Image (cartoon, rainbow, N blue to C red; front, side, top):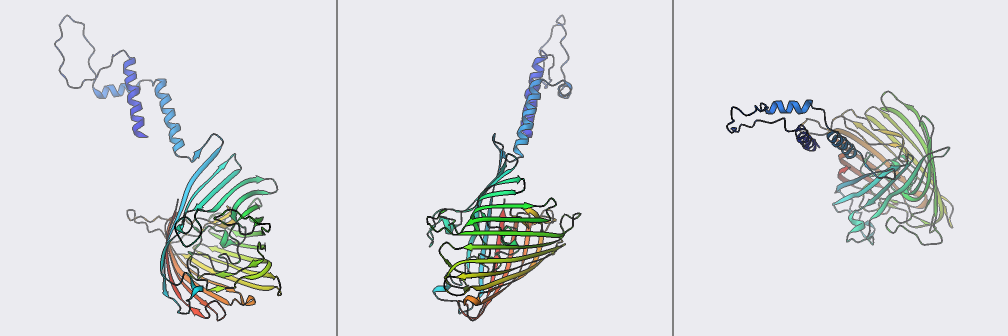
Length: 470
C-alpha cells in the first residue's frame, strides 16, 4: 500500500508541475548552454529540496484526492472479511490436528478380532478440516465444515470415499420469544463437554461417557437457543433425525428414528470486573432417542481415536432410551473443575428396562496464570471458549506461551446390560503457543472389570497432539 501511495504522489506531482506551465525546474547538475547577454533572463532553477517543498504546499488537485480516497477504501476492504452485494460476510478457516499414540504398556489380554485396530502405535491426522462461516442481513449466520481426513477421502479399509459433513447449518437470531433458530447438521444440545469445541476442550479426546456413548454427536435437525437478558440462564431444545450418515448425507428408509433434546444452564456467580475469571456454572439436560433400527449399542475406546473398544454392550434389541445428565463447572482464576454425570434408561424390546450410567471429573491449572474462557451464550449456548495466553510463545521476544496441567477421572457402568465397568485416569500438560496453536500431552491409564470385552485389563498409553487452526 505504501508504494502505491508514493507512485500516486509522484504522478500527481508531475501533473502539478505540468499545470504550472513549466515554471518549476529542477537542477540535476548538468551544465547549461551559453546564454546571450541580450536574451531575457530565465528563472533561477530550483533545487530538489525547494521543488519538493513547493509540491507539498501546493493545493492538491482533485485527481490526487480521488486517488487517495480510493486507496483508503481498498485498505479498509483488505482488513475486513469478504462481503458481497447481498449483505453477506464470509470468513474461511481450517483445523489441523496431528496425533502420535504410543501403547507404552498394552495389556496382553487385548487381542483377537475384537481388538481391531489393535494396540499398535500409530500416527494420524486426527482432524483435517476446512470451514466457511459468515453472517448476513444482521440476524443470519451460517457455518459449513467438511472433514478431509484420509479415512474418509483416501484409499482405506473403510467404504467412505467423500468428505464427511460436520457442521452445515443456517441460524436466524434475535427472534422475539424464541431467540435463535437453527436448521441443518450440528451438535445435539446436550452435555457441556460435548458442546465445547474440541479445540477448546482440555484433553485430546472427550471422556468415555460422553464420547458418543450418552451424549449425541452432530445430527440433522432443528433447535432453538435462548437466554435471559443477562445471559445467566440459557435454555435449548431441538428435534433431530437419528444418526444420518456423515458420509452418505442421507437415509432412505420408512423408519428414520428421531432424537429430542433439551438443556438448561444457570450461572449463579460470574465475576463481571474480571470478565469471568471467577464463575460457577450449573446445568442439566435430557436426551430421548427413538432408535431407527430398534437396536442400540454402548461402547467406548480408551480416550484415543484409533483403538480397541475396551467396553462394549454388543447390539441390544431396544426400542428407545432416555438419558439425563447434570453438569457443573467452577473457574477460580487459573483453576478449573468440571464434572458431569449421566444416567440412561434403556427400553428393551423383550427384557425389562435396563439402567446404565457414567461420570467424569477433571481439574486443570494454568501454571502461567491464565484462566479458561467461558462463553455465556456461544455457538451452542453456554460453553467454554478459546484460551488466550498472556504471552504468546516467541523465542525472539522471550515469551513461553501458556502452560496448563490437567487430570481427569472418567467412569462407565454397563453392568445392567452385562457390559461391565470401565475406569479411566488421564493426566497431562497443554502448551499453548498462541490462542490458535497448542501442543498436548496425555498419559492415559484404562482399567476394565472382568465382564468387559477383554476381561480385567490395565494398560498405559502415551499420547501427543499438535493442534492449530485459523
